[in-house]
Length: 270
Ligand SMILES: *[C@@H]1O[C@H](CO)[C@@H](O)[C@H](O)[C@H]1NC(C)=O
Ligand SMILES: *[C@@H]1O[C@H](CO)[C@@H](O)[C@H](O)[C@H]1NC(C)=O
Ligand SMILES: *[C@@H]1O[C@H](CO)[C@@H](O)[C@H](O)[C@H]1NC(C)=O
Ligand SMILES: *[C@@H]1O[C@H](CO)[C@@H](O)[C@H](O)[C@H]1NC(C)=O
Image 1 (tube, rainbow, N blue to C red):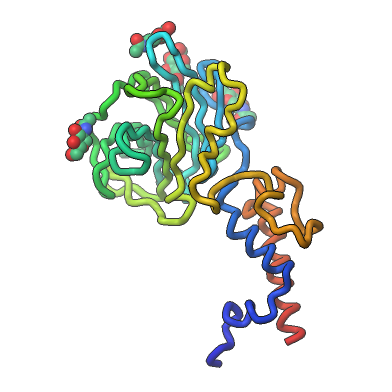
Image 2 (tube, rainbow, N blue to C red; image 1 turned 180 degrees about the vertical axis):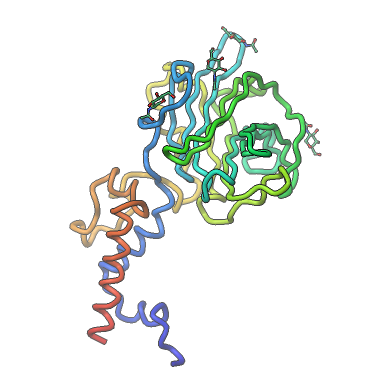
């Protein structure tokens, strides 16, 4: 039995098709379902723009008020295990990651959905004031689609409103009113991007680049052709919608089944 694990055997006879499928599966978390258009958010007319964020199936609806440098935001994401979890949206005035993030975190606290502010300084979060003003905060859990929503108006932190450090996150549990640590999957660790509030006002014709500063190849939700080796084009799903749903629903199931089939074919020939 020494070398009988399928994962050890696979590379020896792995056909190109299976490699492609593996590649697509690895890339799957990069591009989640495009949810902006289907979300039924409260007071939707407050928000002129919506971005589907590149990880965690999260979306940000927003409007930017240049006159007084404020913004209305509605963040939407689904906690991994439903309504006992939490969702978070943050701007980080001092760095690109989680530490230093000035966060709004929503969860059910003693039965009531609530949203609180957190100055993130360690993996154990503690409610605290944050460095910019927020008002009209609200939150809700939508049982129809399993998402939690954070609504707020914010005074945009000093600096370039087209280059804000945005961070978001989801977690599956809350203990004694404290959100527990999130998972450490690539999707979680990659949940940060530059946010261009100005593009949302309509001045910039191309909001797309703000979603893809392209630091980490596996997280870039670029169209499939640039990510997939050329040899077997017939195996590549239609870009970008095909790739965007890999790992979810029927397409994900199809890929997993295809992969299982390839593995079993391989053993058949072995
Ligand atoms: C959207 O929300 C409104 C008001 O909350 C509700 O009447 C409507 O049924 C919802 N639509 C969907 C598709 O969830
Ligand atoms: C929606 O708008 C109403 C009326 O302005 C306001 O009372 C309510 O707090 C708003 N809700 C959210 C979630 O923004
Ligand atoms: C900015 O202006 C809008 C209306 O133009 C107002 O609703 C909002 O409260 C103002 N925000 C600040 C921080 O003054
Ligand atoms: C957040 O925490 C850091 C580190 O303790 C501190 O330097 C900073 O002043 C805090 N920010 C706010 C808004 O409290």
